[in-house]
Image: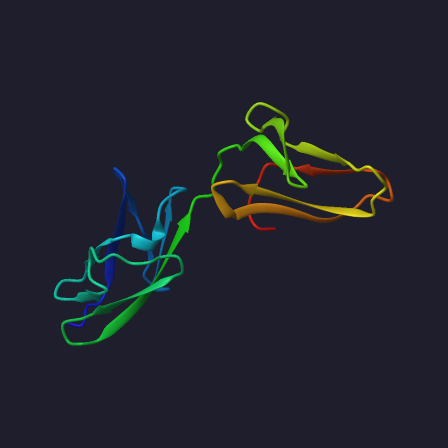
Length: 171
């Protein structure tokens, strides 16, 4: 047989099974998994044409931090590659700010995006006039998840203000 189609591609996440969307003409598979899913160790369940095999094999753990290639080999040895892309749903959890550090001095703040307006205004007051200031807001559990404002022109005032929408991601 020369049949070498990828007919299903499913990933189990917790108690849910996520079915891949297969585009047979483009030879692609796309899936979207929930925020927090570790895409470095997913083991998909794969179904292929009768008498065909897949490489990697069904239930083999794979790293999907970037697109992965699956090769389907027909009984007669002919092959077809499929590019599999896994997307993680963005985090929609509203952040809560409880502390801040400014010049190595910690202070308290209340900024809960779930209960306040969708932006927070951060105003820094200096003891002298400033030309610019940079602000980095960082997730205390993940330093790769942050938002940086730089530079902010303050027109020589002693107060510099920026507004933040609560989204953290390197920008």
